[in-house]
Image (cartoon, rainbow, N blue to C red):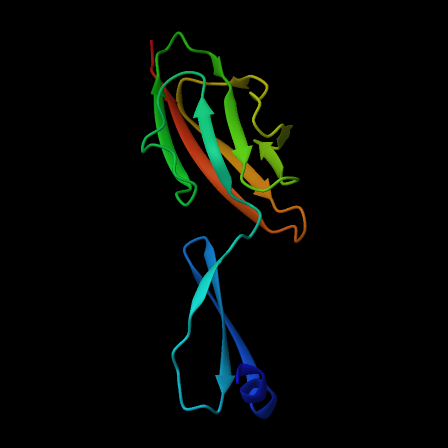
Amino acid sequence: MIGKLLSAKRLSRRAWLHGAVVFSAFAVVGCGSDSFEGEPVDLGYNLDFLTISVGTLTPAFVSSKVSYTASVANSVVSMTMTPRAATAGATIKINGVLASSGSASSAIALAVGANTIRIVVTAPDTGNEKTYTVVVTRASS
């Protein structure tokens, strides 16, 4: 039945972005129905895990959220981050420095005040990127 229907009508693909998730749907054009069903498509550039060596991420890490904060004492002059890509082969850079998925990064120097750290995840097949930002505030003396 579906094969006959598809051969008689034109197949139309629609995609839309909701947050960081792309939904994709197919519909048969000309059947008098505008209802679509779709499922999330993995874009290959998400983290599924991120921790910091000192302090606490606020809010708690969720891959769909891209902005975080943390506070550290003045005595903390550097920290590391451990990111893990959701897709094998994705590239991760922290402040432009290549990081290994699932391993602690090299030390990230912290100045007194707000320090913006950017974690860029690049999909292995498309080159699409997603940037997570962590603002770490080091207390003054």
